[in-house]
Structure formats: structure tokens, C-alpha cells
Image (cartoon, rainbow over all chains, first blue to last red; front, side, top):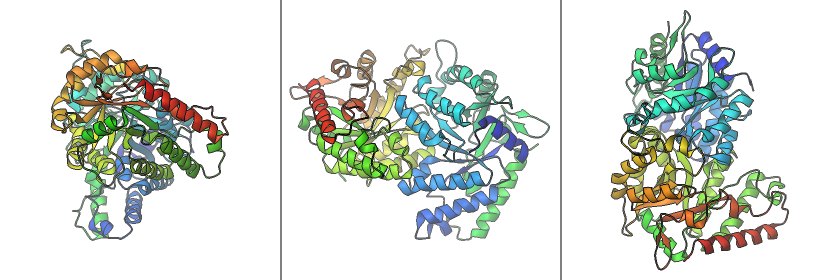
Length: 292
Length: 292
């Protein structure tokens, strides 16, 4: 496994593909087309579907983001599937960001870091929830340093409820999300690679472009993982609000889209070719919106 | 599966056993005794170890708490093991609280709720991280209502880093953890059972007894899951600071201990009988400390 700095690998891939698009790998049971759901071996059928999808998108975008929940929902076989399709994606040249939003303390956080960021896993990075404090993040940051992996820490999420706690005004005259970003400054600096970007990234919803600009001021070198583009309604312009427009492409992280491109047809779709054509059209449109 | 209110089931179990002790099921790779680690089939060996442990503690305490991270660390086979040993614990009459600290939004949160709180899972409750906001908790609360399950939401965790964000002073003159507890009041009321306790519980570290008393004022009917007793150094008195002393036992949730009782011998221990004697001695001591 390539153990050079994650941020360097992601920025190289972004330059190579010319866009910062990251597509979700979300086997969403209620959205899967009929031609996938009607097969008797559900897990095998989903595996074939995900592999077809990876074949359609590989070489065109820098990264994919499997959502752990949809694999966990399939039971223990789903976890095997998560590792298998992530390994397949990696072999096709895609970086793999595991969206698992894990959070725990001490030896438990170490166990999660070992499970998902050790050298022999197919994952390049993982998403984390910071509520438990800086010590809960340390084992993951150590794995980044040692194994060339990355993390994306939730700062400002894309959902309406993000305001409930993340936006709370603190006595020290900052919102909670700003304080979390500020506490990440030191660890972010420590993981900056040759590219000038850091393997400590943050999750910032495309639905909150002004907050994204504020977080970019606090963390100029952090890679942003920006969900909410597409199905959640954010425009390319909003999603790119904290990205840097270079002559080649938009740098500064990845813009993630899951449902909109993976599920272009209705769940009743029985036609594999119709689904493929829909994916290709959606992919082209998204790449165009996110390219220079 | 019994779909009566989770809080009612937990309080009945606590009354029956006479103590509120909850023991971790944490196959912590570096702490497992030599006689477990030396076998060639690691997962099978850990399964036998966990079953021996469950046999030693069943009927004596109300609940167990498997820590997902230690199972996930074993790969996909570990997830099968998690379900299998949880089912075994349930069959021995123990309630099973899955410590997974999940957090996500929308359809992803629904997928997690489906994975762990649907009727056919062996889990009675799950731990959740609230940072993403109230809408991220809704799918789990709906599963509690529909399936007689419970949740324990992280409010004040037991680690030193809990102070980093959870204790931040808000402009509205409350700490962040107090505001989160306050926002949980309505949903907590909605899940109160016949026992007077709610299936919406909270995680409050034994290492912070004063904060526990404050959270009890805000959420008088919430069950508390209190980690940090034992290995993390908190006394029984500190752990019980927000519990109600009835004539029979201490009511108001569960006090959790993981490493201290499960691993009484050194990792070099080759003697199954020595380990069992250590578990029994530790268990008796803990039960005594937490009984009337």
C-alpha cells in the first residue's frame, strides 16, 4: 500500500482527473434499481451493481466514498462487501474515503483506527465525529502520520439540524464549529504534505457556503470533504465556495455526490443499460459543473 | 423479540438482580489472555472466551455492553461474532447495549437504525453521538418507539478530552453538554414507560459526578449509562451520584465496567481457571460496591 501523504495523493489525483468530484458508494436498499433487487443473492447482486458503477466512474474522478451504514445494514456479509468493493475501487485507481463518522476514546479509538486506517486496509481516509474531544482523534492522527492515511473531521454538516449544536454561540465569541476548527489548527499543520495540503481534512456541507469560507480562513491547508452537492440541493458554486481555482482545476478537497448520480433511474428500473446511460449522463454533467 | 418499553425492561432487570452493573464485552486484542490468543482460529477462540464470560456473569447483572470497535477490528468475521455473542447474551437473560456511538443524517441514520434497532437484531439499545443535531437522532427514536428499543446519547463522556468541546460555555449561560441535555427533554418525555423511566438515555462519565447531578436535574427520567467505573478510576459513589437509592437497589440506569472485570489477569495468563476465579472475585466486589 502506498504510504505517501494522503493529501499529496488526493491532490495529484485531482490534478490528473481535472475535477474534485467524489462519488458515494451507497447501496441504499430502497433506491437500488429493480434489476438489482430482484436477484436472489442480494449481497452478490449489490456487489455486481457496485462494480459496474465503479467501472463507469473510474479514471474520471479522484475518489469514492462508501457509506458504512448501508453496508452495515446488510449484516456481517455487508462488511465483507464493504472491504471487497473498496479494494476493487482502489485497484481501479480511485482513492477510497470511508464515511463511517466514528467516535470513541482511548483504546477503543485505537481499535477503530486499527480497523480502518492500518496499512493493509483498502481505505485511504475515514470521516470522524469530534464531539468526544481532541484525545479521541489522536489515535487516528497517529495512523495518518504512520500509514499515509487521512481523516475528515465533521465540522459543519449539510443537514438542517447542523444548526442545533454546531452553530451555538460560545461566550468566547465564536460558534461551536469555529472553535472546533480552531482546535484542529495544530494537528492540521502537523499533517501537511509536499503539496501544501494537509491529511487532516474537515467535513463542511455544501449547503452552508458562508460557513465554508469562514472555516477555510481558520484552516487554510485542510482538505474539505463537501457533501450536499446534488440530491441535497447545493449548487456547484456553493460547493466550491472554499476551493481554490487553479489553471487546471479546483483544489482544496473533494465535492461529494451520492444519490443523484448513482440512482438516476427510478427504483422500478429493470433495464441495466438505461441505468448505465443515466449514470454516464449525470456524471458528465457533474464533472462539467466542477471543472474549469 | 420482546417489544415492550426498553426502560421498563431495564428497570425490571435491575430490580431482579439487585444492582445496576453493566459489563463490557470488549475483545480487546492486547488484553486477551494468552490461552485465548494462542489458538489458531482467533475469532473462534474469542467467541469461546466471550461465551465463558457471559456464563460467569449472566443472572447476576442486568446488562452487557459489547463495544463495536473491538469486533470491527476483527474484520467482517468480527461483525458476525458481535451478532452471535449478543444473541447468546440475550438468550441468557441479559439486556444488550451496543456501544457503537453512531452518528449520521437522513437516510444514512435510518440505515444505522435499521441495522441495529430493528426487531430482529439482538440489541436492546445503542449509543449515539449527538453532534449532527436533533434530526440525526430521529430515526433512532422512531425505532425505540416502534420496536421497544433504547438509545444512550453521549452528553458528557468519561475521558479527559470531554472538556474540549462538551464543557464549552455558551452565550446563553450553559455548557454545551447542558444545552444538549436540555434539547433532549422533549424526546425523553415521549419515551417514558410504565416504570417512569425513559428509553431515551444518556451517557454520563463516572469521572464527572457533579456534571452527572446537573444532567439529572435537566433529565430526571433519562436512564444514565455511566462508563468510567473501575479501570478509569471512578469510585462506586461517584458513579452512583445521579442514581436513586430505593430500598431494593440503585435505580436510574447502568454503571458500566469493562476492562477491570473482564481482564483480571495479565495478558500472559495461560490458565483458564485462574482467569475465571479473577472474574468471579472482581464481579463480586463490583456487585457489592453497587448494591444496597
